[in-house]
Picture 1 (cartoon, rainbow, N blue to C red):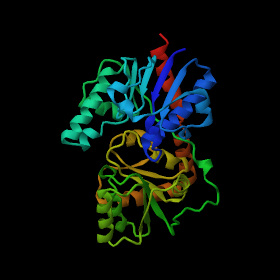
Picture 2: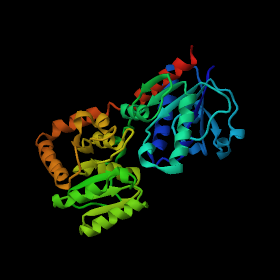
Picture 3: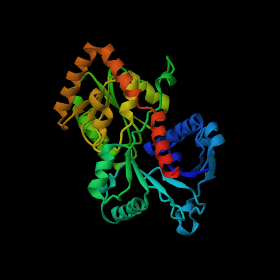
Length: 359
């Protein structure tokens, strides 16, 4: 029976995209492998078993993660038939030269980092690239940017879009969020980082006097302080709500009840929040940068630049058109979003596994 190791220890941080990718892919893989009765011995790794479902722990082998595995002398020595590095930034590598599948989410570090830190990141990434037997990317944007900055080995490459967990049914009908919002509002969720371009949302708000703005996510960064100062300078303290990290139910509530989901990010390897918002039939406004046009398709609205008045006018004009045919447009959004299935994603990865271990 072929043995596959999934380097999945990033699953521990479920507040971030990489953690969710690990969790959702592994859960879907378990279902697909079980349904198709594929004869594979799959090993997963994490600090704790509680991040996995009972079904995953029943059908997959669990190996407890240790930080010592990062050290060359203590690398895992078992000879698997395939090693899958689920994230390109992991520092755990197999001791032996094994068939190696690398999943690349983005190479944003090439545009965000400098100096010694960047050089270390580049060397780590090059090592992974050069040992790869095959490469998967989560978007064409991720693939294009990798080829732009690096010499990619002559191996099979695949673009496999992420899935999206079906979340609409999880929200209770009469649920009340921790922070309730009076009146119409725009909603954003994500860590307060410069690449998220959050300040542009604050700047557009004076041009939409009837709306409030909810900015959810980790906000302990220096950029968060920049955003807070901008809110103060524009005297928007009563219209911008910053609740910090929110629970899943609060997130779903805001997706469902906001007037629009707004996401002007400059660099996204994929970008799951727009798809989640679309599941509720919520109109979505995105930047036209990175992978977001791939993700939003023709069903999202896009900003071509970030002039505050232009951004506000785009929201106002498109929301008027959306609301004029709201029922049909919501149905189209939901249908589009529901096509992003983790089962489809897992089947695509399983096909790659088969091509590498069944020869």
